[in-house]
Length: 181
Length: 181
Image (cartoon, rainbow over all chains, first blue to last red; front, side):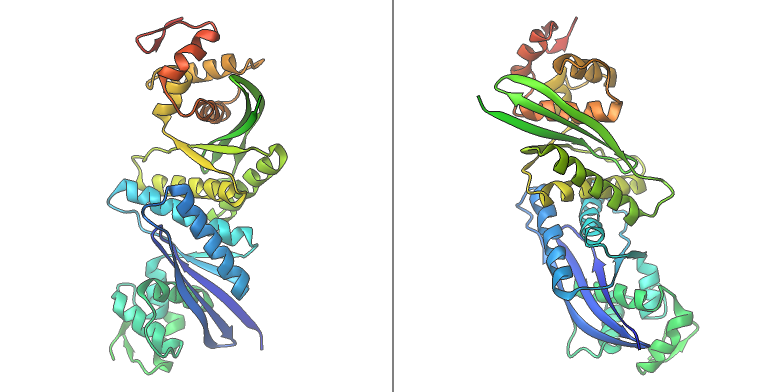
């Protein structure tokens, strides 16, 4: 049975979440997760360096085969959008520099894949990540989003069709695309 | 007399301009310039890879001591701002990955440094770049902007005060902060 190791990324300038999982056939296994933080007081080049080098370390440590990156939102504040874009550019650079194939998923796709519906609350995503990966406790929000993105990739970026079964296997009932218990 | 080699960058997703100059004491010498283009039809990770790897080659070829990057504008279209931000993040990543100290300048600072006033037209910047570096012909607009950013850094990112003399030395007259002939 083939094993694929997937690195999920939730990019941000202040905090970039990462999560590593393995897919053994149809089974998902947690490997690691965490976040890389850059300091507000540092200049932008220094912050980009922190993110780029931090992700480089994560890649060197866990040796993923694939990467999956969450697509980011356009912020109400254009200046924030520009900063977020630069952080995401640094994350993508670290991934492609390491020779990883990179897939991109919208938050909607990630939520559909993990919870079974695109409008799921953050807590529901966190909850399902814990369930699906049999974690002993809840990871931080950024790490959970990154793990959710990796899970989405493990399921081919497919939505409810592929994952109704996954939610069910974890003891959840899905009705009309919604998680109901 | 110490020599400093400066790499100027005008970042963009479709076209990133670069320009390399040397500062010998108070004299500026042209080394190289050009641009790195990514294809519209490629996915974003592929385009980021093209920019990151392309700048890596430029750095390996010309071995600059410093880098100077133009600060980008927030676009009217938020999606364009996000894409531009990602391209700039890739450029910054390539520079910091190579261990280069990176300075950032606004378009206003660059124009003030090169032409003597912040509202100079693009053609005026191009014209002064040709003059100041004694180029045999005009570089493309992106390469000229990158060279202008490098020139700005060579003069400590300072405005008119430092550069009135530079414009004059190139045979131009400056009056009230404006280039007049």
